[in-house]
Image (cartoon, rainbow, N blue to C red; front, top):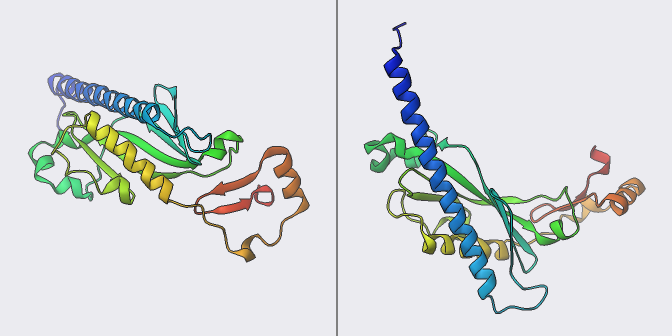
Length: 222
């Protein structure tokens, strides 16, 4: 095994450390743009009905929420840096081949829940990842997502993530959530329930609900 020089070690630490710092700063900026766009949309909404109005809440430096028409979007910013897998389509682009450090990104996840999951503190309810935003050292971005969330966005390395991109991401996420409907489960899957499950639900809201789950009781499974 060849000896590793101090120069090689400290150069690598310096380069990787500065890359992580730059990506973290850009991811923070992207999250700020998303929060600003969400707040702007909620403020400009003409809907005043209690069940339809758009509400935005900042929970922490890494999490925020939007509520609208029975749905909730949760935006969650990771504090770490990630790289695409070797098999990902992004890794085969000329943009990445020209500079491999462009493949390192910060990530912001977008989850869809039912708003009642938070209103009634149903901690066992399920949410769904509908999109994730990747931001690299150049503030270039890439979005992986479902239908409306994933089809509006350019090839990685084409555009910078800015106010317009953030607003479009929010709007497309809202449209997807609105059109992603709650399904009732097959009748035979829920035709029987124990008294204990009903009592647990009455006491602890143990009925698990998700849009593609419909609902199910957890008491006999734990």
